[in-house]
Length: 339
Image 1 (cartoon, helix red, strand yellow):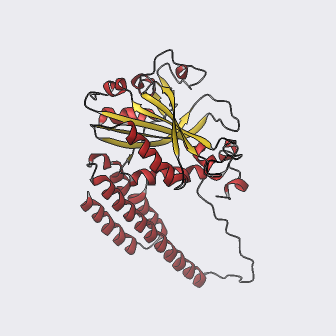
Image 2 (cartoon, helix red, strand yellow):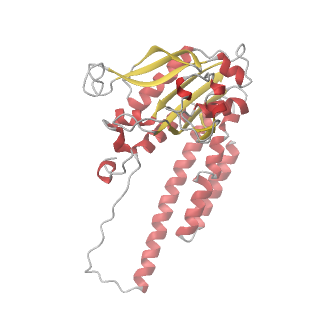
Image 3 (cartoon, one colour):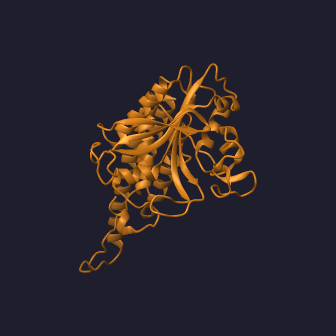
C-alpha cells in the first residue's frame, strides 16, 4: 500500500503541475481527494492491514493528503491569477468602481468535530467505515441483541418505512456489517447521521450525528476501552481532561457504562456548563456482548471487543459552549460565522 500511496503522490503532483484551467484542476482534485477518490479509497482499505501497519500507513496518507491540498490551493491561485491577467488584457475595466466585498464561509461546527474525531482515531490506527442510513431492523436491532419488546424498537422512538426497514437510529448497524464481512482484528469508527422520533428542543433533534467505535481482537478488556477513551478525551477536549465510568445497561454490551469527562471549562470545580457537577456526560460504551459476536460469526471464547458511541452535537455543544442544539441546524449565518 505504501507503493500505491507514493505512486498517487507522484502522479497527482505531475497532473496538478501540468493542468491549464480551473475545471480540469477540480476534476483532478475529485479524482484523488473526492469521496470516491483514489486516496480516499485507500483509507477505506486500511482494515486489511496489520495492527502495526495501520498507524504508519494512516500517517503517510494524511501527509500526502495535506501535501496535495497545499498543491491544489497553490495551483488554484496561480490559475486564477492568470485568468485575471487575461481578462485585464481583453476587457475594459472601470478602476473607479468600488469592489465587491468577498464573504468567506467556514466549516460547520458539526463537520469540524467529525473531522477532528476522524483524525484522532486514524492516528490510533482505526479505519473509517460507512453504511446506509435507510437500514434493515436486522442490522439495527436483531444482530445487536435487542429484543422485540425493547422500547427502542417502538414506533414512538424509531422512524419506520416498512415493518423491517427504518431510518437507522444508531450507527451500530455499520459495526454489524463490519463484523459480518471482516475477520478480527477489527478496529474502526463509523460517523454518520441517525434518526429518532424526538421532539425538537434545546437538547434533542429528530436527526443528529453519531460516531461509534468498535475493536474486536484477542484479549481485549475494559482497561483497553478506558485507555482508548482517555486518549480520545485528552486529544479532543484538552490534556487535563479526566474520564470516569458509571454502570449502565445496553443490550449489545456487557458490562456497559456511561462515560463522563471532567468539565473542561472549570476543570471539575463546577460551573454553568457542567451545571455545578464538575462532570459532563459524554458517551455510552462497554464490552461487546457475546451474543453480538456470536450473531456475526465470531467466537466469543476466542475473541472479545469493546464498543462506544457518542453524539457529535453533544461534543460540539460542550466544546464550543453552545446551549441550544437547534442553533446547529438553523443555518443562521450570524451564528455559523463564529466558527
